[in-house]
Amino acid sequence: MVSILLIALTIIISLVAWQKPDLMGKMLMNPYRIQHRNEYWRFVSSGFIHADFTHLFFNLFSFFFFGVQLERIFNQLFPTFASELYILFYVLAIVAADFPTFNKHKNNPNYNSLGASGAVSAVIFAGILFFPLEPIYLFGVLKIPGIIYAGLFTWYSIEMDKRSRDFVNHSAHLYGGLFGIMAMTLLYPKVWISFVEQIMSLLR
Image (cartoon, rainbow, N blue to C red; front, side, top):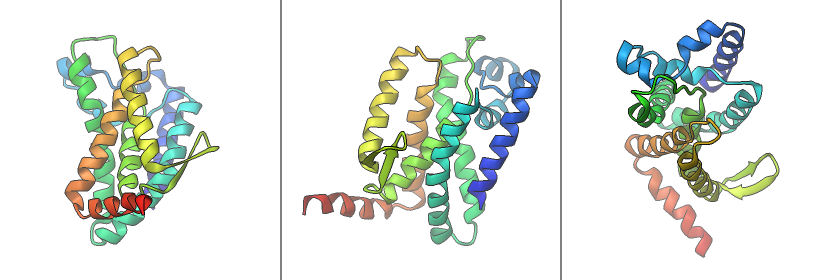
């Protein structure tokens, strides 16, 4: 499975980067260096490194459950090139999620960010389009429908991005989620028919 390979690759790269600070520094999302030194690889490389084990675990824990499910959907909808399209979706999500941050901080040499949060958010929101009522266990305990989780997640990301006190790129969560919705809409517009039908079923 591509999802498992992406998880394994992210774990390996993160573990190696923790042992090699110089490598970590070269892979960070640093908008200033991208803008002024043309280090464009940072758009992608930053999505495969994490700050610490907790950061790594929670991103990959979420990705495992939603990623495996979304990959199956890709296999059903696009059987000829599902793996290639799924990988492209994931990588583009990393870039798209960080692009607004790049524009905002491209003249700030001290700004750095890292993590797969943008891509994971894209996978989560794309999956929610197919299964909006599928239960999500927040913190592994609180059971809520996917559509409710999406609303809470969006509100939280916007509010935390305004405060910018915890050094986490919350806008990457938000824009990653938006990318997931837009990409899935372009790839399979009929998803909205199923989405609306499932939401309307709550009112019956």
